[in-house]
Image (cartoon, rainbow, N blue to C red; front, side):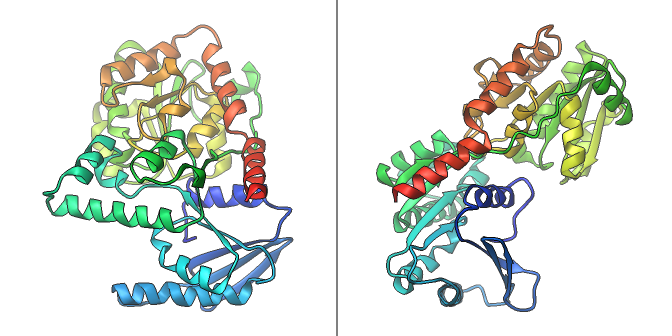
Length: 385
């Protein structure tokens, strides 16, 4: 793995280690801020940090780097054991050939945390299909196509593929033409850390965070980035405030502040930008939120969505890759850029007089995204291979 963000692959690695804590696990981190290879032990978990190196970014040097990395890995691996390597980035594909050469009976598993074409195409599957099937391509389309082909080659090289969502599972089979026996779906899962607050405790927490008792809190957590659909949320919030004067939008995360602050100019007193905050502080905002909104154009299995559902927050989401299967049918935005429908859904939840949406959100979490569910699926899968 490489250095990863708090709400991304880093979180996944931590959860995976907890799932497999009864086994001997080694985490290899590339591009670490160390001067030499460093090894640390914590129970049955071993961490190997490999320093960043400077090398000319040519194909030969790229392959040579991962070839040398495979030699390093083979030194620290017990070749008498049944070694299983779990890769988290598709651009590590050169290491596969060398691992199989040095570690005869090893199994290599790829986890799909993202698909490269999703970023330039905003997760638009129809556009990808067109690029794949069209013979004449412009420069940008050629880059996307070549990355798709590289991903496909990578998925064919590994022994098994773990995907985090049903739609990705289907794409691997239908678009990438991967044999179904190689694919297993294991969504992310987290331990239930929700602490129930009574009415008075919630009121006190809202005051502590400088909100009024009757403020209706809309919560966004994620990067301040176009791919996250934040501009759509801010635009819809104008409609919400026209109907509900006590609505307040909290935006948690860092990124392009200048762009989004300008979009909020005339309602800036109703929007709070927190920047990047600690998990403890984030969980306080979860405790006071009345509705959460995730409008990403593409995800795999959002930890933020899981955390919100764990906290019984009704979750409004887009009908996009990796998100739509996490959202209740009643709160799913079928047309991602339909600002009027989005504002109507937000108002619908904020003015609801019962706890149906909160209960449903928690039930989705308990049914699909608990740590126990994730752990059992990983153990069952690894024992089956």
